[in-house]
Image (cartoon, rainbow, N blue to C red):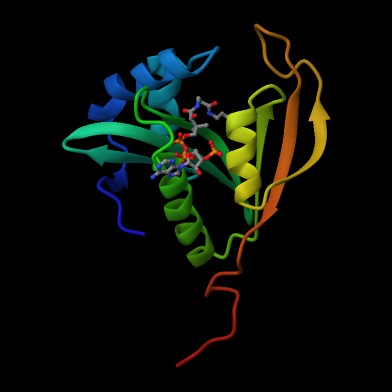
Amino acid sequence: MTTPWAIRAAERRDVAELLVIEREQFPEPWTKGMLMDEMANAESRRYTVAVLDGRIVGYLGVMFVLDELHVNTIGTMPGFEGRGVASSLLDEAWADATVRGIARATLEVAVSNARAIELYYRYGFKPVGVRKNYYELSHEDALVLWADLPIGPTQGPQVD
Ligand SMILES: CC(C)(COP(=O)(O)OP(=O)(O)OC[C@H]1O[C@@H](n2cnc3c(N)ncnc32)[C@H](O)[C@@H]1OP(=O)(O)O)[C@@H](O)C(=O)NCCC(=O)NCCS
């Protein structure tokens, strides 16, 4: 699907805008140091941003563990929700993951976060368990979700 925003790799210069998303969208926002550490870990992490008219409207951070992808964080800039920003970030990450031969994806989400849970269910995630008191401040439980991804070309039959 063509979107009015573009998706590119996150860069250090994006951190100020990512912190706005963190502070306004997450009850337990990441700090600048946490974000920088995550983004610096290029071997196992992949951070992408959606950019509209030079401004960041959403971001996604995933982590690779063997042949699995873990969604570490996803957030849309306040005022830009409901337009498909998060969906397009996930679409792009899924396309990249299938090329890498990643077979499954997982994440934790607060049990009360209906909006995010609905989004994940649309991407084929299914609940497999609950982590009690997962969140440090709220002590809220997290749902553990898993999804199968389409098998990418590195694991599929070779076609000339
Ligand atoms: C959860 C979150 C990332 C979703 O981001 P988003 O950009 O609003 O997501 P999308 O727009 O891709 O999809 C959300 C909804 O918009 C709808 N939508 C998609 N494109 C649309 C469009 N062009 N116009 C109107 N609605 C649209 C989708 O159908 C979806 O509907 P739903 O509300 O029934 O689920 C966002 O709400 C957020 O940042 N939340 C706070 C942080 C958070 O909780 N992150 C998850 C932690 S696990």
